[in-house]
Image (tube, rainbow, N blue to C red):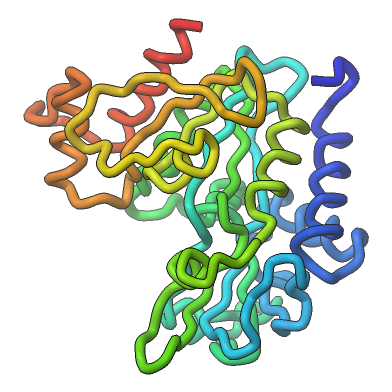
Length: 290
């Protein structure tokens, strides 16, 4: 990593990646969107966009619907952090309810069109962690929020997805989601290229992956299941000396999560057991090995 890298420079470089490979909107507009998130304004500013803003490099089919794009986001200070941790999820899943509940800048529900709009956000909507002090704490923390809150105490945490876009599309009479469409059609989504640009930018000490698809993309090795296996670090085929920690996706069924944590010697039967805390402990355990 460039020794002179700081959060401001990092944000500018991320905006360049987004502008050139993800969204057809100006750097100024993308910067405004990030500033609104970092200032705790949530998703009310410019988060509903027409599908035309999606960069053609992502190869989203014209007849797709329920489109979503998650932009990379980060927590902590990249200059002073103990470790730089990159977390890679699969894609920016969107549900119809998100379109129904879309709000304008005044907080009024206006809805979004599932055919013509795309909803912008961040992985697991974690930009919502940055809120004004006067706002009330959310009811129950998500697993993802707990993981980030624990990791960012000492580390810089960068969040991104393998596939930057999500959608559904009908192929013949069957409705399929975006990553299945890309597999079946063997279409180049430039997803790996974009992810490698991010890896080179952040230069993480470790890459945390949620789910097996990302491992296959980064290492070229097929992984069928992670739920009953002890975590073993592997390495990316495309970048030297950056270890990858392959984890079960936090959204997996609880039975699969229980198998995973038991295989990794974490007691799921404790009265105060919490999945988010368990993920944090497992990641911290491997961070301390480096």
